[in-house]
Image 1 (cartoon, one colour):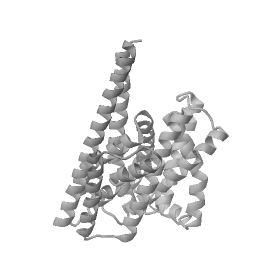
Image 2 (tube, helix red, strand yellow; image 1 turned 45 degrees about the vertical axis):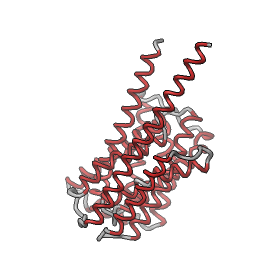
Image 3 (cartoon, one colour; image 1 turned 90 degrees about the vertical axis):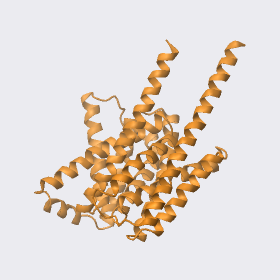
Image 4 (cartoon, helix red, strand yellow; image 1 turned 30 degrees about the vertical axis):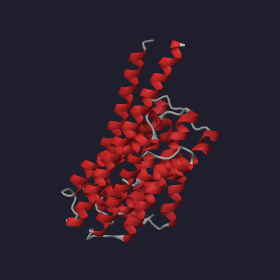
Length: 324
């Protein structure tokens, strides 16, 4: 088989995975904000999203549209931490959108690369380069400056967003590890994630008192076509986001997924000032967001350069070994 064609195919898949995740992720922020403004029961919404995902994959498997395997108990046990971290990440992210505007939410979520690098350092991946370190410091500094100038500062919202960053970091690292070690496809991991999360989510919505009031509110709003449209859209995009995130992490890496998240945040931050409201513009807040965005772009460039140099070195080593 031609090596060049294999490389081109792999590069196309990597690019497709990154772009599709970036688009789905950017759209999902606004869709979630829109639905939370009308339906504040975030845990129930997450339960609906996971139930829709599990049922879709199950029917796809039964009808032959997907080759995903059935539930395997040993595999389910290994993927249980992934499911728990994922749902904790999404639950805290959804809850934070109740009190945090979109530009600040995105700025806080840009701290994920910092958390990924720290996790990698403690797991033995080594010290990051100077450019990566400085760019991450710039990202963190931008969040602090923007928070000081945020007139709509909401401590519970900020706390939930930061907690979401922690859980997203653990989730991304575990997804990358499970995808590499278990050889599971993105659809199979999606199914396990949804299947394993449902008992946990059902327990939470009952324990926290969301149910049955969330169901009553849903029935009360069922005659609103605009609400139903946003609800269905959030379910569909939730499935799309899950798939593209797992695909991007498996095809590329956890770090690439966070880089894509940072870059899509540039567009989301800009749109966040004009869509859905809730933003009180202040010079210090805007300055902090600009610093945060610049740090994110610098970080992405630094990681791209680092990976390119590594690829060139690997190719050089391979050529040298073939000559011997």
